[in-house]
Length: 553
Image 1 (cartoon, one colour):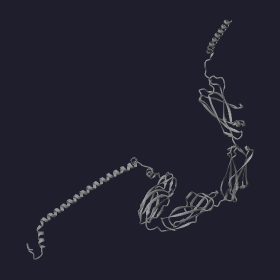
Image 2 (cartoon, one colour):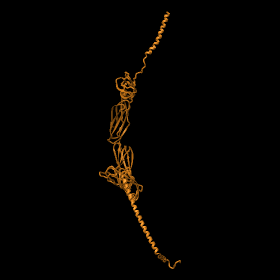
Image 3 (cartoon, rainbow, N blue to C red):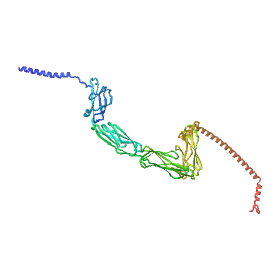
Image 4 (cartoon, rainbow, N blue to C red):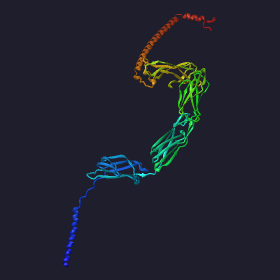
């Protein structure tokens, strides 16, 4: 028995050892080769919601961004809502491509409670994977506290009006809160106005218009009332401070004065215009016109409301007794045009003082020209006085362009100057000369206007002649006229030299003949003196006083 038991034990031990060796070998033979997991998620998907918070369920805008950074195309891409009720195909998103798009979304109460909105994306499997790839993406959304806010403003078409004028008052309500408002009511005293509106969404505006006929000063103090459904119909109110529409008091006066009552002919007097506004309105586009001589003195001036003063100066040349008067025209804040006229002021002219007495005359070289251009005009400055004038400036009156400057103009002398006037159309052109007299007073002389017409058959203007006066430069070496004049001058110079040479030879011949004649006369006189020498000696003896002997004193 003992041997049998020992044998069984040995057999069991052998079987155990053999089994333990065989199991590792079998496992090593049956283990599969390692493989990579399938490529599935190749898209990077995100989205945002606007607004990011809502007081209650409502519409929001979702913006999705999909990026494919892999080497594989995502085919048959779909987007679905989390409940699966709304599905939309997006097509294919190529490898390395991206797409951004927006969709409207009705935020539910459940999404507000959960604090997030979820969407599901899907596309076909990648790299031979037969299974569809799914993505679940979400974005936070918050429940906001209801905030009812309204911006309430007012605007007047005019703050000053005349009786009977119509003034428009415009009220504007804008919902600046985060919940809609309803049952809007605007009330104001002028015209007993009452404006109504049913609903105003977040960010929206509404205008209310009140047209009031003004008979007297009125006070505007509007009130806006509205309710908020998100707060169980709570009523709110907004008011504006008082603002007045006043009756326009348009008091505009103008006064004109001269720096002296008398002045000599040729001198210049200064006129001072004082404009005063004493009312409660402002004036715009204030313009001043010369009522006596015509023309616009000033324009586009401004004067504020209340007591305002505006002062202007203008100069007049004295040509004789004169009367000056100005007109002021302005646009009131009420929209009305106001005019006022100064009282006329008179000036008595005295004869010109001894000294520079200048008259100015102008004459068109060509009264008719063929086309527009720089027309020549001869200007004559006649100083009949005994003294010279200085610092004289010649001006074309219409444009005020300075044509020439003279340092001085001599007395009892006429100065001529040819100037070139740009003529674009038929018209009259006058000139004036501002100068300083001997006493240091500023004076002005003016010419009678000259008429220049542009007509067919008129004189063609010489462009080369007028070019230096019109600012153009001329190269004389290339000018054929200059070369012709230069050749003529050379010929004249040669002829003059020949004439001088001939004259000089004639004068030398005459001088030689005259000297030869003088020489012959001297020789004849010397011959006579030698022949009658005794006679001359006897004459000198006869000239001795009586009682004197030869050789005795």
